[in-house]
Structures are given as structure tokens and as C-alpha cells.
Length: 201
Image (tube, rainbow, N blue to C red; front, side):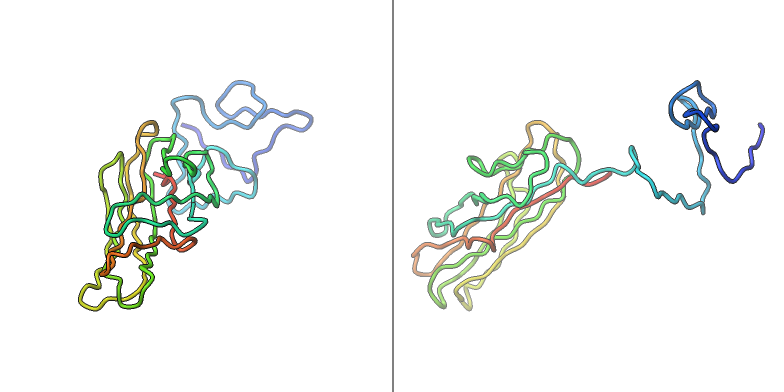
């Protein structure tokens, strides 16, 4: 095995091609298919140019919230209709019909959400439950229970990581708020939101 020691690798003057272990191309190429290019421990790669094929993007990704208060029956499971998108990189979130996220790339996804419930009357709020459902089944929930000391309004936040198959798997946000007088409740607009993104694995 031979060793090459140099400080700079550049294309030959007047050409656009340098071959390092490969056939003629229009780029500088290290190795051929099947080779391993080893960067030893302690070496820093300093990139001041444009990179492709390294790392990854945190997409598909979306973030949405309620544009107005959503009314729901007291103590009833209600799908939260986050209808205003802040962003939706791959058009995977349905903000008009099913209010669900169906990512088109398989992988692990970080999901987050919050429901802010208001029962409308002081000392009448008993509890709020926030649930994430995957394909209709609950996968994570958060709850605040004030039945021993009722209030009027408050929020529950949760986050989780879930595997998605990139084709049919979907997730939805559901919630429930309970009032002592059974008068019904609201999910408050911009305080109620739903989002997520693919994790780089």
C-alpha cells in the first residue's frame, strides 16, 4: 500500500477533471464503488462549500394550529381540527378534512401537541386530556386533573417519537375537557397546536 502526502488536491490547470482511484468524471472522486474512505478519529472535516449526501433533512415536517376556538361536547372525545398551517414541507398534513399527518417517508418521527381547554366559568374546569392516536389507536396521552380544586382553563402538552411506515400510517390529535356543570368546553385557538418532523437516524 502506498501513501500520498499533500496539502491540497485540485483539478489540473485547464481541465475540470481530477481522478483519484476512478475513471474520468467532471468531479474530484475518491475511490470506486465498494471502497471505504476512512477518516481517522480526531480529524475535523471543515466544509465551507455546498454539501450533498451528508446528514439529512428533518422532513417531512409540519406545524398547525386552530384558527378559531373549537367547540366540543363536554367529556366527549373530540378530534382537534388544527386547520392553519405554519408549514407543511411535503403536503403530508391534512388541514381541511381529516386533520391528520400521513408522512410519505418511512422512519421515526418526533411529534408534539398541546390542547388548551376552557370551560367558560371559574371553578368549573375538572380535567383536560390530550391524546395522540396512530391509525386510530392511542399511543400517548397527557392529563391534568383538578377535580379536587376546579379552575377555569388550562393546557396539556405532550411529545413522543413514533415509527411511521411512510405510506398508510397516520397520526391525529384528540382531546377531552370536562366541566362540573356539563356545559361544554372549548379548545382555544392559537394555544392549541399539533406538529412533527422526521428524525435523522
